[in-house]
Length: 532
Image (cartoon, rainbow, N blue to C red; front, side):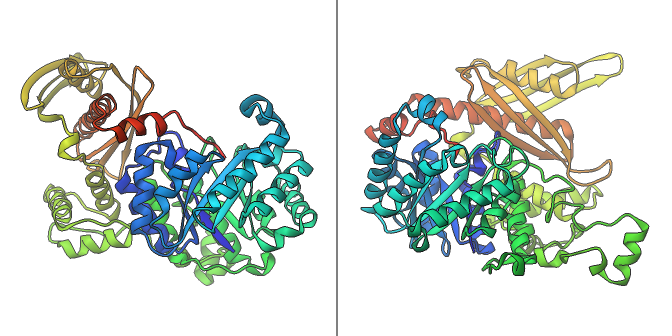
């Protein structure tokens, strides 16, 4: 069974889950440790950043096939190939919608025109590499015989993988399984290609539909770590894998996956996207192997198999209470980070170690999650080029009969500025003080669209992680986070990061420096979106 992970493409389309190039490379390398067969690294024509991320993954990640997505258009396929060409195992994945509603309302094309576009796109992609995947978008709402006509044309044009996507999560398991079987029975040519499924979770059926596809002949499953993705998400990679591993005899499949990396992969994706894993999430949730009922506890003590069909260690679940103190050295911290999928240079390790020791000196008990939170904060640090605004000093006054008031001293493009603000609480006051101080350098108004506060570990001295989304007047979203033992400082750090991202974005978008930059803004702009 081929595991095709699309966390970096479809998963990143989760609202608020955008990743930097460095973060994408970290996840791609962890997916390689997990030993997935295919990594769909991105949609290269969507933006210059996505193009660069796919290109660097193709250059630096060994093992899996590196795949890029492209619409059935020559310019998309050209851009996709430029991004993946340096991979030892490149794949171009092209697609076009086939359901009646998409033909009429989106493409405004006839059925015959779409078949011709399919043939042209596959043949054009075949000029670049031999491994070509084709998807009839919105397949589960497509007339099944017409879908077979499109698939047959794609195979004859040279497609080596045919993917059947339930793009809007409309299918139910029995129905979807029948669709896969119909394709195999109706099109003898599918015997010579990989038959894939790609299911969304709008009705909560993504994993069940995917497994129904496997049971009826699919040999590849497309999925995302933690089930992230458009809208309600995609089939969860860890759930697909453990179903196939635990019930291998039923599905008659074999996997090449390193199961012990599942938990680490889940946590890395959660930390870098800022999307938490629900406690009762199958396989990787905090409660997945927890037992509170006395009857269950007694059974587990006697024999874990009484209530566990998987062992925690099988998926790399080792608990999260590894205590680090002020005497812990960089080797212990490096080991924790490496096991969790992070890679840092010596300078960054030194930063993380110093922050850990600083916290420990304040009599805080440091746990594994604290170390990872600090590492995540370092990962999200902006470069000098991106840092226009720096926090120098901050003070806040609040109380039960006092209007929360804050004052800040900021360094803005090398100049020191002081500002004040009031709010309904101390965080709101700091936010207003910062916005009042930087308004002269902001080309567009910013608003705080989302604010989330989480205590990393328990206790009143818990390390706080603040994740925010800021939105400018054009609807651009900038995600940032801050980590600190003080909630207000963590909030201020996140706000400053978000502001810097917005300023840097606006400066770059308004100052093309070469013909290539201008081309990127026209051809690879942020207006290209896909939901396959």
